[in-house]
Length: 256
Ligand code: PGA
Image 1 (tube, rainbow, N blue to C red):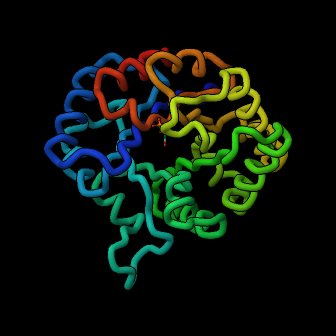
Image 2: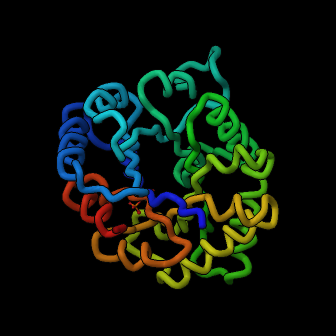
Image 3: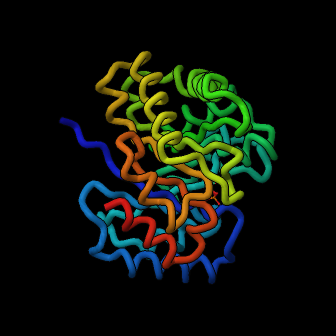
């Protein structure tokens, strides 16, 4: 049977200047050195401007990788202030976060734009970490499922099977991000299973079972293990708790 990777992603958001970022990355690398089990991958998403410096700290062929928090939907051009996928590759990134709820909410990024970003990332060899998740906690399960299904269908389902097999999905209920509130591990598992089912309906079981689906939203040292032991939860997308090396490393180790 195919064993999909277990993955923990650190989303630093707009935190840490260069010196602080280098210190945090150095601590994480030292603490995880030779400590990460087979099939576990760790992905750091620092601010763009730290990527090159942090890439120089990473041992080659280790379990720790680098990614960006966003990219532009075009490969180059007159888009002042933007960063393109091939630029990210050139400074050591191999992953890119796409469709985080903060990008959707504060920067008005919608499904069609996100579909373009996913495509351009894949063309330039970046694996997309695609975020989805319902906005409201109070709506019914059926409503939440429809909402997430629509996000997947409109931004991912233009891909070929080979392409979607490169994507990592992160389920992040928006109401859980940065709030200290979370779904129960049982509720999260049910949504992850649903996401896998939706992908399987379009691309088949084999593709769906190879795609890592991560949980994100107030995932911390206390609750990570409860989520990670569920069969369809393949790891986590960690915001606040990734800003302290000890907490982040504890979360990574709770995957094992
Ligand atoms: P949080 O953020 O862990 O601080 O809730 C998660 C995210 O936004 O990816």
